[in-house]
Length: 386
Image 1 (cartoon, helix red, strand yellow):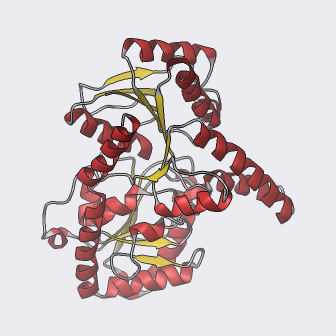
Image 2 (tube, rainbow, N blue to C red; image 1 turned 60 degrees about the vertical axis):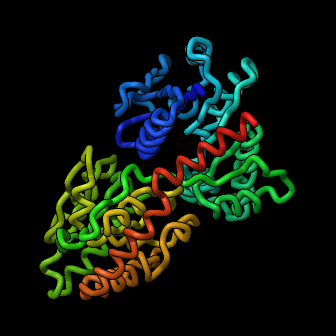
């Protein structure tokens, strides 16, 4: 099959990483894979041909999201579809109506198949809108009304214009059903994101240091990095953890504010954006995630794959599909910094517990191996041509 991935791009974007992993795997099993992006990305496989939309302002994120279906980009995509004889478009940006409209244009013209992949929770748009609406001090009933109106409009358009609508968690299927209890959802399926590589060493714990890790964007609105700084401040008040350190890996719009907040705290380092983070996972014992909302954060699976134990605030539904609380990670009450710190310190005190949970985490990550996820994707592709 000739498969075309559409996505925004950017090398520090999790969707780009997943696209790289899956496109490589599909190429290896005999498919011809092409990638078309708004922002340039580095592809790891020379056999995958890359195209860049011509009508894009990389300095304007909102325009990339909302105006990708310009006439110039439609003409450009037409040419790719015809010349490369594309059978299937996989839309990695279906949270945006403009990207869905771009795919629908191709579907109508060439009777091709569209697979839309949502890399966020079903309530992603609500979460984003809620933050902006809340600041305007609108009454809750009006926020709820606007939320439901926006959710149903966007979700129906994205779903109805696709041959299959892929979500990353079974919990998101439940959310969709609650939004649209009367809708026929036979096109809705769950395929999780894959691990690029499965850990090979069974002695992974031996190389670990007393390090707590955060990996991701330094962006307060979603990631709430200030929570991690406040939790670390609580931990640092206890003298028994002076041999532990905190490493923050990543970059983003709020990095200077977060550095300023952490200025007087000991044993905390900002590592910046790193092309490869495997070494950080392998050396760290614990991972912190305090996001206000997420889709299916691969940072948790990648951490588990390297025996790094995640401690996560319970703020998104797919979390239950990744972590079994108390066995291969910890799920803490949302917004409760003191409880989060308490759980972290109890784990930091017990090397025996660390070893047990680290081994459990590695075993749990096997559920998301590339081989298993690729099999699900191949089955989906076959269903399109039965």
